Amino acid sequence: MVTYAVVFAAVMLSAPENGATPPLPTLPTVVERISDNVSTGMIHGWHSNHLLKYKGVLYADGRVDDPAANNETSIGASPGNAWAWGGAFFRRTPDGQWEKVRSTLESTYLSLMAPDGRLWDVAPSSFDMAEVIRMTNPLDFSTFEVVYSGTCAYMGAGMSPEGNFLMLHAESKDIAAFRPNAIISAFYDQSTGKWHKQRFVTPEGRYGYIGILLKGKRALAVLNSAISDPKANPDFPHYSWRHVRVASCDDLTKDKWVNKGFLMPEYGATSLQDFIEGPDGNGYLAYSYGEANTLDEWRKTPTHHYIARIRHDLSAEVFPTTLNASSTRILIDSKGNWYVLGRASDSELHLWAIDPTNGFKPTREYVLPGTKKLEGYVIHPLRPERFGGEDDGDTIHVVSACYVDENGQPPAAGQKAHHAELWHAQFSLPVE
Image (cartoon, rainbow, N blue to C red; front, side, top):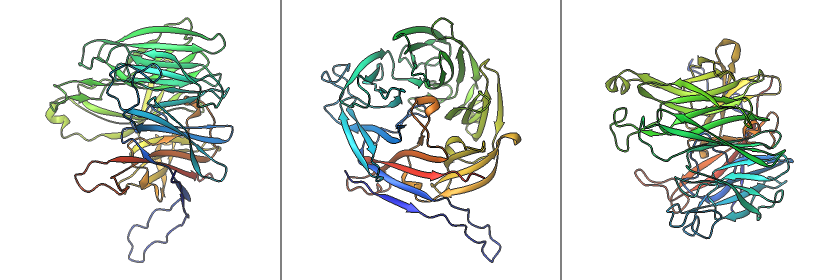
């Protein structure tokens, strides 16, 4: 295992004498390579998760290219499936090094940690399957078993503080636009050990990039459409990620889901990026969005960054942040200050302090030097309110991938990456 860390010191650069805009302040950032060989397909889906903390220890996981994976010998897999991915779990040791804990034949995609130390993982074996595996013994990576098998790998999952588990997945992998599909809700109540299933229809077609806030038996969710629509996107295979629904359920053991359209443009695009619970108990969604009335108009329409406040009754307020950022994540420090972490035009991660009393507009900006290595389009932070485990206070941890050629170097122009490296970055919020 090749593992090393690079530490970047914080500096406040002085303004140049020629009156040009001074460089942004930087934050001390530790950047560590977790693995030098994971799959280029491991970073996928804003709703997925690859980083957890439990009893003070960080754990990461990722997909690994493996032609032997996901065949009839792996847990619950579909014979003849073409997904040649296995998985690997990593642990950060007390001296700051990363070590591989175990390899697995299953394709790790969305990891969650129950309070009893049993790790759950949504590990799809194909597009039309979404197996959920769970440790039978706490922190024993050799004891996974299948506890649920869903009908489509387009999904989302959440873990409550009590150890309840919820998975929402598409009923069918049919991607045709406006061919009604449905969401299957599978809720595991840890107090009884029983599963409770429901179904609700999504008229626009398949949904699958789903973020969930689960507390006890109560859930709030955001769902992004995953459809093929030649009218909205003439370019094959006509993918259109523009519709968003919101859904809630008061008691997953007895009450029905309520859902409604939130963003329903005729033409446009939506990129969901983060979903957290705020101090007021409401959900906060970060996303970029653009809409238009015609295809020609849409081709000239930019997307903008927003934060929406979504209540359990599914009412919402939308705030344009004015941020020019991608892959954003919302952070709140120990004093209640709000931030957005994301990628800026220089490819480094930036941190913006934002003001929730003024439409979440930015007030300060910092650079996290050395974080160009985390170039995957999703940045995974610790998210205990969605995936279980623990946070680390005002210390922030994120993981993502860096794409390289056969020699571990950046691919040449026009060349596809041979594999990826998995990287971790750590920094402290500038608490005031």
